[in-house]
Image (cartoon, rainbow, N blue to C red):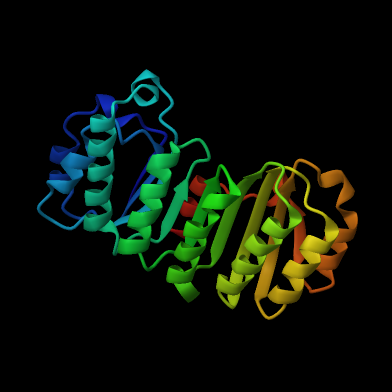
Length: 253
């Protein structure tokens, strides 16, 4: 097993040779590494043997090259990402996408995840607006009963309660019947109590062990937390229970 964590692969040119020498290598985890503005993916794709990439947590490459990337370079970036999912999608079990990843790249990544990945157990995703959440729900539906840990963050900016209710109802419909961990991370407009009640009524048939919540308006949510606990769901604060990718991988693998 190899775990790459926080590595900038843009300055590493011969990773392919290293992989070829590791004959007994079974599983690879890539956590919060800079890989898309480098030739790392192409070297991985060029490997003769299958690459058992189990975990891929994509972080924001917030530098001058990514901020001012041409359409042609962005398309090449997306094409290389698609090839990576084609090669390793059948092995992937854990996927995360950082909140600041470029929206175009994020949406295309979700498309590729939906097309090539069916074994996802751990899914961590942050969306910049509620209108794009539907593609995340498609992913959850595809993962089905394999999914055991799900974290979604959404920036809710002056959204109507009807839109939030619609999102939560759709979420309740696609969540697997057994889920070990659910994290909802909302920032922006506060979510009122009746919205949570609608979600819980639809969600009562699901066996959820632990629920983690973060809200920028958390202080006024005591009643909502009691409502969750009435369904035998443990409610924990975000910073008390948030699962970090590297800790999860280290413990599970």
